[in-house]
Image (cartoon, rainbow, N blue to C red; front, side, top):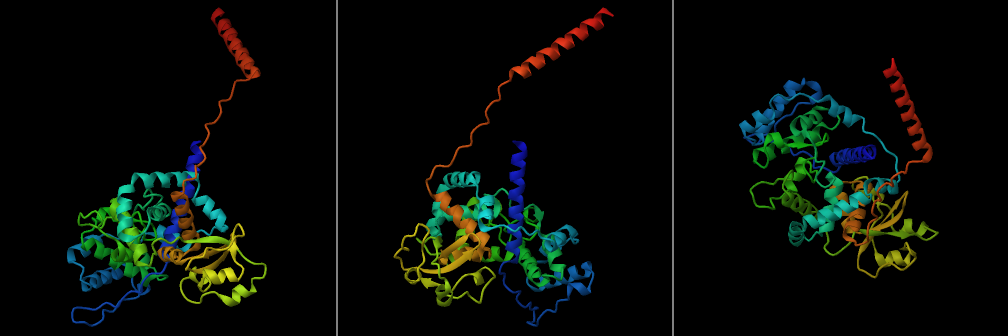
Length: 397
């Protein structure tokens, strides 16, 4: 039983690590030009051309030019050296070839659904306040939280500044992570968290919502009103920040994420009517152009039971996967904005459905006690008899 528990924990950790990697490679803003006090641009040096210590000194100077206070810069960037393990992780990310159904089954089992429902009930008061403020329902907030950090249990343990400095110094994605490094300094400088508590994943994602520093500055909120945007340990701030992220990126109240569908035998008309998109992240480019549900109905798309599609005024895009076809609505694309991967967005969508429904979950049965067989009992009795005989012989000697 202990081995099974350890195996499940390992699977969760692997899933979260991969999620962090996807988070770090999702759409992030291009770094803005840095201006010095007189308005002239600050020239940055390519990290490849200089040793790390010299490069880090350049980061300190640029941070000061950006308005970060000298004490924050001195403290946060003191005694930092590249972490080779982070570079190894970044360059040798494991590739798991799974179907969408296999991924969903691995991430959303009965224990996860049960825990999601328990967390929904435990945090109901604050979830309802967040839902009232941002118009994002509690089961969606719980699902994002559950997939991002396993309901807050795996939010990252690595000191964030060495992680970001290591990735920023590396030439592979240096510009992106350099920008994230300055954003992390701004978070510290604003006093939202102390340096010892500023921890995250190896890919730079922070706290229970797994925000990158740039996302923190845009979307994190102080929902409990204590003066800090604490996405590490304040549940009101965690749920409020997730709600603010989804609402700001276009969440539509009262609308679901989409549905599984069946397609007509001749799908040529579908491709002609609604071709794949040509802009956006990779997952977005796997969606068709949106069309009204009524138009998909006319093209022969039906529910998985073969019934007509709902008569609702909703734009939907067709998503074809190795596990079937889906019509996804604008709220699904909001989930993609959080992490641009269909496995992620579909996992959140499916978990949210299971958290909100009232279907009873199977109860794990306790293992049956094995009765001792007659042969085993007889063998033990025989062994005991031999031991007694041997002992009595020794005593005679």
